[in-house]
Length: 247
Image (tube, rainbow, N blue to C red; front, side, top):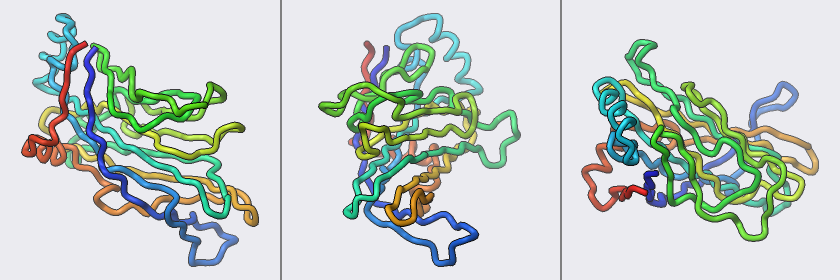
């Protein structure tokens, strides 16, 4: 297995804006201080580190290098409690992948996503474990103390598609509070531009108005990620390089 130790990037506070509904007049309610989103971590995967020492898989990935690139993309979303006690009921983080100007057969897909299922919240991820088949097998190191397994807390979907999504659900025993890290390996056409368009949504249970859906008002720098530009920036700054080691 190959382990990638990823840097912890800054979290940026984002506003939630109430989703317009026919029965509600404008302007819509705006909430601050409940959600933050990290700067994206982008790491291109070489055939050697992705193969994790397996010769057969290295041969496949080396052959793939002439027409496919694999890039790791990681984001962290932080959910905070409300001063007035209105809790999150659920949340969703979506990523739409595209290669502008490229034909359908050269559009990127999410080759592997993490987490796929998890029944408890965890601390911010610092290490990513990759199997030889580019499957993400580990995205967190420690479980929040005192929290046991129960109903599913996070469900990921959209593997092998261009629009992966994670849905986070508050459970009976655990409120939707804390940091969640979402990671995917993007398979893209070699040399093609690759963009990731991010969306964040949440439902808050208000005491007076009940369940109310919101969408995050993301700034352009967080809403659209140029994976090639992020990779170039990381390569130019050696202090931001991601160390790797085989295991």
